[in-house]
Image 1 (cartoon, helix red, strand yellow):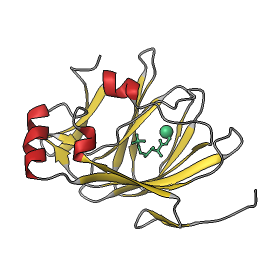
Image 2 (cartoon, protein in one colour):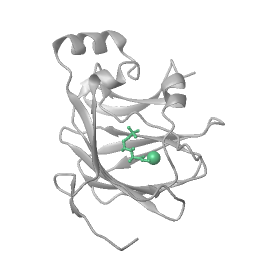
Image 3 (cartoon, helix red, strand yellow):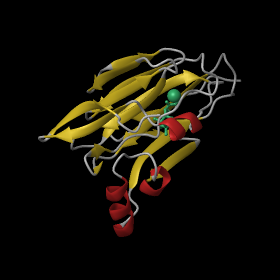
Length: 187
Ligand code: PAN
Ligand code: ZN
């Protein structure tokens, strides 16, 4: 294939041209927030977009690099901040780099054998997510949280494990500030 370029608008979080834009709404994440009563109340009123991902497609092979830009909107379900679904890569031995572009976030990570980690994000923070670590981004600020992701073409996404077990840590608001706490419901 030939070299190519796209344009990343790092203030807006868009890539043009993008091959695909993933739009995730509240209803796509019904079971993923700890306060199910708050989720039900919010869904009765509306079904807001929680985040979007501008994706550039490359061949799904190990030598290639997927790259995409995610925008998580500000907000909470109950006391839990808007966040991505989070996933292991389908090919678990693949890493990823996240770079913060706008806003404030928290990266939650965990392994299958019970290790957990988190990294606070502001513009310029560049995190290395090693192979075998599940990852979820959370918007802990009042503005949009925008970050770039780069990961191997063959990585794929496994959402099922996290859907079933949840994340070991939650990011919730306490006294007006974000805190990372153990998830009492994590399986
Ligand atoms: C990211 C994520 C993106 C959306 O590109 O796919 O931020 O998060 P979810 O995929 O968890 O909904 C990435 O980590 N790709 O591998
Ligand atoms: Zn990933």
